[in-house]
Length: 414
Ligand SMILES: Cc1ncc(COP(=O)(O)O)c(C=O)c1O
Image 1 (cartoon, protein in one colour):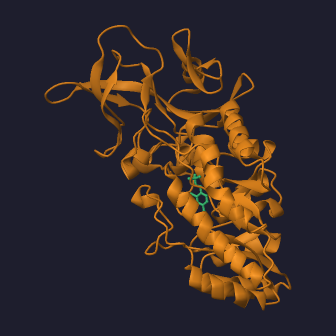
Image 2 (tube, rainbow, N blue to C red; image 1 turned 180 degrees about the vertical axis):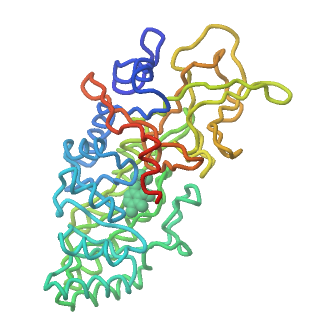
Image 3 (tube, rainbow, N blue to C red; image 1 turned 30 degrees about the vertical axis):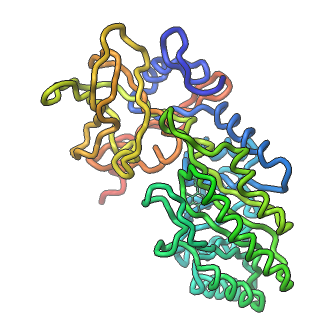
């Protein structure tokens, strides 16, 4: 079975013991399983096999070059959310026609780049942005491919920081605005509307919002088709959630397909999805060493590790819950502990009141399900260098991103 499992009493990634990786690569270190990413992609792909579709991997979830290259090897395409992510996609070997470009507040330079290389679709956020895309395309004598991002006013029922599809959030245009926009764009010689786009949030764990978005977008696509507007695709973004807690109830790939496809089938258009978290989240752990054990007031312990919110900000930012485990369990009575990092913020806490095996300074712990929105959201706060990243692929493990050195961290300071 691909992923993270105990082997002879030691947690391993695809058969490679994590204590060995820590010994050679040091800690903190992010470790990813290529086999688990491939397995999850196969499962998602199989669920949509009955309908023409393309998965554009949301690079934002994990932008490490080796992971993005792996996605290309697996046959996915790319979803870039910034000029930087467009460059990552190109350097990973994606061709422009495999890249969709999304994002609120695209800069003139980013739009210029996207138009010049000719991406598959620029997912346009506003009427003003469409005007700017047209001006760039006209100046170059080009025809830019645009999809209109719709805000369907559907609450993703996820954390409020990552719910993006209801009115009042900054994302996309209302269906009414989009309807007008698409007709407008149809008359412009330097623009071609190729699709409709919506992304209503991340870590969605309910079927209803997924179904409602598909119905809203498909409804407009059918209406436009009946008026003679020839679109190519419907892009419903990413957002499929994962189980962070063993008790979490999530939507399976089959349920996801069953929620989307009935509405999309009626459009006759190919389906684009932009999965991120679902593919990489469970395929990564953050491996850390215990650097201190402190008594908590009252009872229990603070287990202080060498990884911090600078390496994984999700608990501090979203109060996200991640499973925490010892790499090798010591025998004996279990302890109650808050697992915390070294950063000067009380929010720098990975888990509160967790039950752990007896723990000593020098032991290794993993924070699980950190493959998505982990390393990619790292910062140098407290002047902490970025952690190393390791990919386990075909029984071999490789450092795919070196630990940042102090010199590298400071090289831009003049
Ligand atoms: C436009 C867009 N597409 C795709 C994604 C990927 O979402 P997820 O990682 O939840 O699948 C995001 C993330 O929020 C996004 O903003």
